[in-house]
Image (tube, rainbow, N blue to C red; front, top):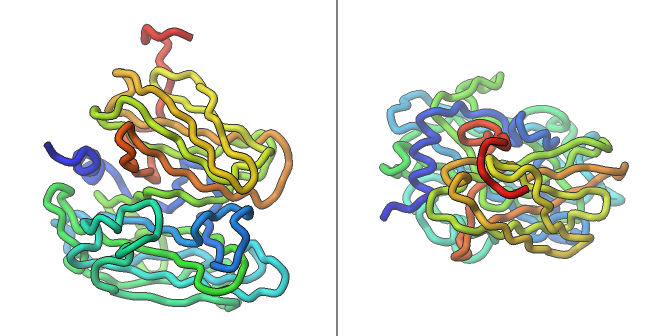
Length: 316
């Protein structure tokens, strides 16, 4: 049997356009990576974040991975006292970039930096990168790891907080241009552990969209450091808004949910609803199936934003 995640990605790379990460549908302001001397209660459990990107195998044009606000300084980032932090961004391709078992582990353990290092840069307190874009590239698609089942070349970008105690907030965009954000047809980005800033406006809703394949019968939604200013719910084609058991400050919580037949081969909508004003709420999300296997989050919902179908015969 093929890996169900592979089947998902075959479907995705044939219909999607790359976009910014976090995606526009998610209403998430920024990705977050804190540096290694930070306190975990600020919303990052391991001070590292890994994303994968797929370039269609028939693509011949070079591409760029653009990072918005990669430095650690004042305007956007979460500063704790004097600015003393550095973040290292690394892009990998080649054999083992994606297929090494440690590469897709939700934790940065073992050989998670597998593959061939194509580019890296350390960012600190550098005003020239504050609130502006930095380009990695150009890269040739063939520099990635060819995964025939995905019909494309896979690359990996890792952000590690290597020094200090500040939080780096940033965005990615996969582009065919070094000067503007031009999507690449058929490409996609995904992660197995999502660390991000929640929209701070009371009443706002942030979304993440995992995809459920037809082998999943139950899921565990794992949250870290949700805090007490937000709550979570699960919406799908057969769930109108099931409550998700979220974590409090500096702790993990697990919420188990049964997957109905109607939900298989659809996206889920995990919603984080802000109910009172509080700044700087960063959280970590992972999701596993009944076998403990991590499922990926995609920057755009596969098949569109899931909507509850009132005609489905489910008990309310």
